[in-house]
Image 1 (tube, rainbow, N blue to C red):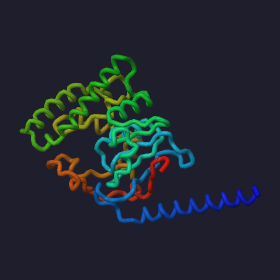
Image 2: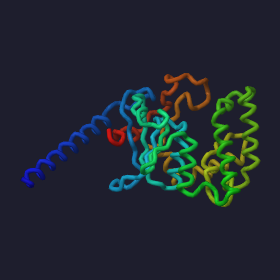
Image 3: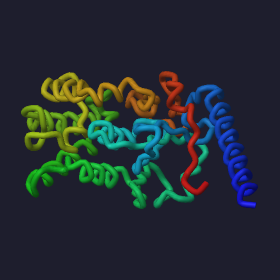
Image 4: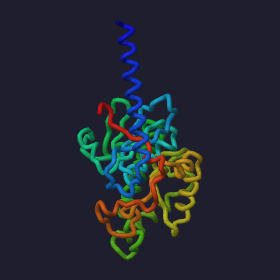
Length: 264
C-alpha cells in the first residue's frame, strides 16, 4: 500500500513538473511584451543560487520607476532576491497591502511603499548610516533624491517652475557631493539614490563612479534592467498607460520565466 502511495506521489510530482516546464516554455516562446499593458502573467529573474530560494522577493511593474532604487540596493549589497516583473494583469491587487506596487517580501514580512522598502533594505544591509547623526543625514539626502525624481520633467524645460526648482536642488546636491560618499566614509542609501545632469560635474563623476562598481555595472547590462518608457524619460507629459511603451525591446530573460504569488 505504501509503495503504491509513493509511486502515485512520484507520478503526480512528475506530472506537475512537466506542466510547470511546459508553461514556462510557452511563456518564453510568446512574443516579447511591447508595453506595460501586455496581458501576460508576471515574470521573475532570480539573483541567487538556483538551489537556494532567497528570502527576499521584490515585486514591481516591468519598469524602472519606483522599483529601481530597491533593485540597486539589492544588487549593490549582494542580498539574494527574486526580481518579479508585473504587466497589465493586476494579479498583485488582492495581496498587496495598499493594493499597489512595489511590494517587498522578506521572509514573513510583506512591505509596500517605495520609501519604506528602501529604508528596510538599507537597514538590512547596514547602509543606513553609522550613528544617529549619519542616519539623519542619509535620510536628508534620500528625501532630496525623491524630490528630484518627482520634478524630473524640469530637465527638458529649464524655464518652467519645475525646471527652476530642479536646478536649485541639483545645485544643493552638487555642493554636498564632496567625495566618494554623501555621508560618512562608506556606501549608504544616500549614495544609491541620486541622479545627475551634465552641468553638475561632481554629481556626474559620482554617478559614473557608482555605475562602475562591479555589482552595479553587471546589473545595468543584465536582463534584470528594464528599458525606459516614454512616460519615464521626462521628455514629454505623462500620457497614461499608452506612454508605458518600451523604448527598446525587453531582453528575453526578463520575461522568460513565469511567476505566481505564493499560495496561488
